[in-house]
Length: 143
Image (cartoon, rainbow, N blue to C red; front, side, top):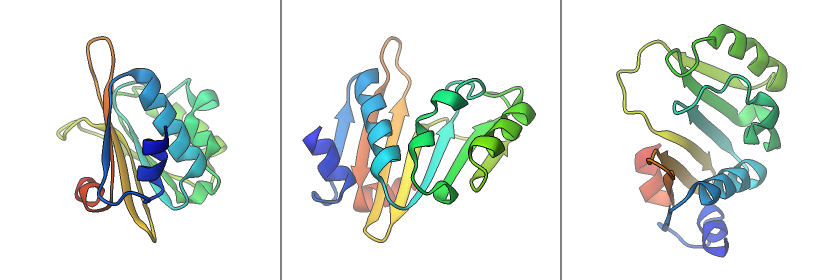
């Protein structure tokens, strides 16, 4: 976990960390939401976010106005209901709903503050998802 914290807190510049399982992905997402100070954009394309709002790790963000979530109509067919619930949980945050899925489906958390950029992407696997955490110039190219 120390290598992950060093990457997120910019103690190691232009560093990256590859995850190999769902638990590592969960730990990174949780740590980012709880500790990153700055703008956070998160996507939700792999799973329907409706019904997860009460356990959404983004609930741990300290400054909710810095949060933006991107979903698609395909991943969340009841997107209007989700939008209403999202506004209740994140009244100062922004929600973007994509109509078409003509884009690369990458689930991730993309962050920026005065120190630079951090990006965490999750790639869907057959039994375990893997992930890629990076900062600085590497992350800037993903954001």
